Length: 101
Image (cartoon, rainbow, N blue to C red; front, side, top):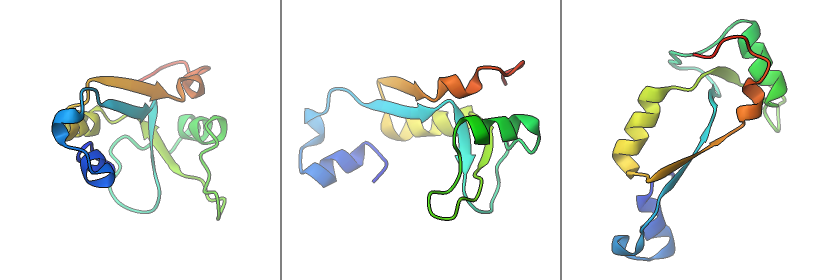
């Protein structure tokens, strides 16, 4: 389960025992397959994220769809999980880009 509540059901501990919830978030967003993707980058920036971030399927080798970090999704994740801090990964992938959005 990808929500903080999964800690309780997966480990069998009561919610009162959880003091800190850390969100682990990639510095950009990726998707696999079809569906809406408001921040998708179908240009050289998207290609940069794919190549520098190694965003290719493990089994198929297909490139993942890449886009800017979706702060609306992050805000929704916070509403559901009430995380107390954020760990942003793959920030190095953004280096070399002229503009961030």
